[in-house]
Image (cartoon, rainbow, N blue to C red; front, side):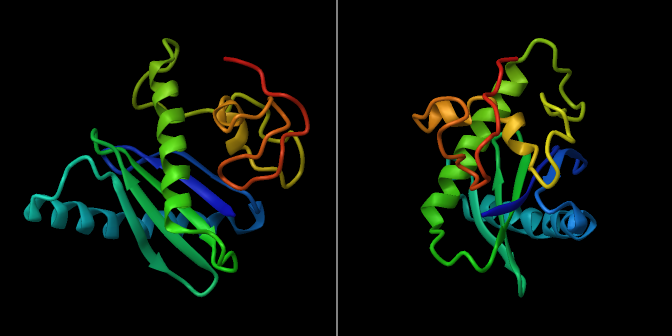
Length: 171
Protein backbone atom coordinates (compact mmCIF):
# COMPACT_ATOMS: atom_id res chain seq x y z
CA UNK A 1 0.00 0.00 0.00
CA UNK A 2 1.29 3.44 -0.89
CA UNK A 3 1.64 5.59 2.21
CA UNK A 4 2.94 8.73 0.49
CA UNK A 5 2.79 10.08 -3.04
CA UNK A 6 4.65 13.15 -4.28
CA UNK A 7 4.85 15.05 -7.56
CA UNK A 8 8.06 17.07 -7.79
CA UNK A 9 8.62 19.78 -10.40
CA UNK A 10 11.63 19.92 -12.71
CA UNK A 11 13.22 22.50 -10.38
CA UNK A 12 12.81 20.11 -7.39
CA UNK A 13 9.99 21.84 -5.51
CA UNK A 14 6.88 19.85 -4.57
CA UNK A 15 3.78 20.30 -6.70
CA UNK A 16 1.81 17.76 -4.71
CA UNK A 17 2.66 15.68 -1.66
CA UNK A 18 0.24 13.69 0.47
CA UNK A 19 0.66 10.92 2.98
CA UNK A 20 -1.96 8.56 4.38
CA UNK A 21 -0.93 8.45 8.07
CA UNK A 22 -0.75 12.18 8.81
CA UNK A 23 1.09 11.66 12.11
CA UNK A 24 4.25 10.71 10.14
CA UNK A 25 3.85 13.40 7.50
CA UNK A 26 7.18 15.11 8.26
CA UNK A 27 9.00 11.78 8.06
CA UNK A 28 7.51 11.09 4.62
CA UNK A 29 8.35 14.59 3.39
CA UNK A 30 11.95 13.99 4.46
CA UNK A 31 12.03 10.62 2.67
CA UNK A 32 10.69 12.18 -0.53
CA UNK A 33 13.21 15.02 -0.49
CA UNK A 34 16.16 12.75 0.26
CA UNK A 35 15.14 10.49 -2.60
CA UNK A 36 15.58 13.36 -5.09
CA UNK A 37 19.36 12.91 -4.94
CA UNK A 38 18.97 9.27 -5.95
CA UNK A 39 16.58 10.28 -8.74
CA UNK A 40 19.13 12.78 -10.09
CA UNK A 41 21.87 10.13 -9.98
CA UNK A 42 19.72 7.62 -11.87
CA UNK A 43 18.72 10.20 -14.48
CA UNK A 44 22.33 11.23 -15.11
CA UNK A 45 23.42 7.57 -15.32
CA UNK A 46 20.67 6.86 -17.86
CA UNK A 47 21.76 9.84 -19.96
CA UNK A 48 25.38 8.65 -20.09
CA UNK A 49 24.46 5.10 -21.03
CA UNK A 50 22.07 6.25 -23.76
CA UNK A 51 19.35 4.00 -22.42
CA UNK A 52 15.95 4.04 -24.12
CA UNK A 53 14.35 7.36 -23.12
CA UNK A 54 10.87 5.82 -23.16
CA UNK A 55 11.67 3.96 -19.94
CA UNK A 56 10.40 6.42 -17.35
CA UNK A 57 10.25 4.07 -14.37
CA UNK A 58 13.33 4.40 -12.15
CA UNK A 59 12.54 1.47 -9.89
CA UNK A 60 13.44 1.15 -6.24
CA UNK A 61 15.32 4.26 -5.15
CA UNK A 62 16.17 3.05 -1.67
CA UNK A 63 14.69 0.80 0.99
CA UNK A 64 14.44 1.62 4.67
CA UNK A 65 13.50 -0.66 7.54
CA UNK A 66 9.78 0.11 7.28
CA UNK A 67 9.32 1.55 3.78
CA UNK A 68 10.47 1.31 0.17
CA UNK A 69 10.81 4.43 -1.98
CA UNK A 70 10.15 4.16 -5.73
CA UNK A 71 10.68 6.75 -8.45
CA UNK A 72 9.39 7.72 -11.88
CA UNK A 73 10.34 10.64 -14.12
CA UNK A 74 8.42 12.12 -17.04
CA UNK A 75 9.88 13.32 -20.32
CA UNK A 76 9.52 16.88 -19.02
CA UNK A 77 11.63 15.94 -15.94
CA UNK A 78 8.72 16.04 -13.49
CA UNK A 79 9.37 13.41 -10.84
CA UNK A 80 6.93 11.11 -9.07
CA UNK A 81 8.00 9.55 -5.79
CA UNK A 82 5.99 6.88 -4.03
CA UNK A 83 6.66 5.53 -0.55
CA UNK A 84 5.31 2.00 -0.03
CA UNK A 85 5.01 0.01 3.17
CA UNK A 86 7.71 -2.70 3.27
CA UNK A 87 5.40 -5.17 4.97
CA UNK A 88 3.50 -5.60 1.69
CA UNK A 89 5.62 -8.33 0.10
CA UNK A 90 2.92 -9.22 -2.45
CA UNK A 91 3.44 -5.92 -4.31
CA UNK A 92 5.40 -6.63 -7.50
CA UNK A 93 7.53 -4.33 -9.62
CA UNK A 94 5.07 -4.31 -12.54
CA UNK A 95 2.26 -3.30 -10.14
CA UNK A 96 4.35 -0.34 -9.02
CA UNK A 97 4.93 0.54 -12.70
CA UNK A 98 1.20 0.39 -13.29
CA UNK A 99 0.53 2.72 -10.34
CA UNK A 100 3.06 5.21 -11.69
CA UNK A 101 1.53 5.05 -15.18
CA UNK A 102 -1.91 5.77 -13.73
CA UNK A 103 -0.46 8.59 -11.64
CA UNK A 104 1.25 9.98 -14.76
CA UNK A 105 -2.04 9.83 -16.69
CA UNK A 106 -3.79 11.68 -13.87
CA UNK A 107 -1.01 14.26 -13.78
CA UNK A 108 -1.47 14.73 -17.54
CA UNK A 109 -5.19 15.28 -16.94
CA UNK A 110 -4.34 18.01 -14.41
CA UNK A 111 -1.96 19.65 -16.90
CA UNK A 112 -4.71 19.63 -19.54
CA UNK A 113 -7.09 21.42 -17.19
CA UNK A 114 -7.46 24.97 -18.59
CA UNK A 115 -7.81 26.37 -15.05
CA UNK A 116 -4.47 25.00 -13.85
CA UNK A 117 -1.40 27.23 -14.12
CA UNK A 118 1.70 25.08 -14.75
CA UNK A 119 4.13 25.32 -11.85
CA UNK A 120 1.43 25.97 -9.23
CA UNK A 121 0.83 23.49 -6.43
CA UNK A 122 -1.71 20.86 -7.33
CA UNK A 123 -4.75 21.15 -5.10
CA UNK A 124 -7.06 18.31 -4.22
CA UNK A 125 -10.53 18.54 -5.73
CA UNK A 126 -12.08 17.47 -2.40
CA UNK A 127 -11.89 18.54 1.18
CA UNK A 128 -8.60 17.69 2.90
CA UNK A 129 -10.46 16.83 6.09
CA UNK A 130 -13.16 14.70 4.46
CA UNK A 131 -12.54 11.83 6.84
CA UNK A 132 -9.86 11.50 9.55
CA UNK A 133 -6.96 9.39 8.34
CA UNK A 134 -8.39 9.17 4.84
CA UNK A 135 -5.85 9.85 2.08
CA UNK A 136 -6.60 12.76 -0.18
CA UNK A 137 -4.75 11.38 -3.20
CA UNK A 138 -7.86 9.52 -4.34
CA UNK A 139 -9.69 12.82 -4.73
CA UNK A 140 -6.79 14.17 -6.77
CA UNK A 141 -7.19 11.25 -9.18
CA UNK A 142 -10.83 11.71 -10.20
CA UNK A 143 -10.76 9.00 -12.85
CA UNK A 144 -8.67 6.32 -11.13
CA UNK A 145 -11.64 4.06 -10.52
CA UNK A 146 -12.91 4.55 -14.07
CA UNK A 147 -9.52 3.50 -15.41
CA UNK A 148 -9.63 0.41 -13.21
CA UNK A 149 -12.98 -0.54 -14.77
CA UNK A 150 -15.08 0.08 -11.69
CA UNK A 151 -17.93 2.42 -11.01
CA UNK A 152 -17.06 5.61 -9.12
CA UNK A 153 -16.85 4.84 -5.43
CA UNK A 154 -16.96 1.07 -5.93
CA UNK A 155 -13.75 0.01 -7.67
CA UNK A 156 -10.32 -0.56 -6.18
CA UNK A 157 -7.93 2.38 -6.10
CA UNK A 158 -4.70 1.60 -8.03
CA UNK A 159 -2.62 3.11 -5.23
CA UNK A 160 -3.97 0.69 -2.63
CA UNK A 161 -5.95 3.27 -0.66
CA UNK A 162 -9.36 2.31 0.75
CA UNK A 163 -12.48 3.03 -1.27
CA UNK A 164 -14.01 6.48 -1.33
CA UNK A 165 -16.96 6.90 1.04
CA UNK A 166 -18.89 8.71 -1.71
CA UNK A 167 -18.62 8.87 -5.52
CA UNK A 168 -16.12 11.34 -6.97
CA UNK A 169 -17.32 14.27 -9.01
CA UNK A 170 -15.84 15.54 -12.25
CA UNK A 171 -13.74 18.69 -12.38
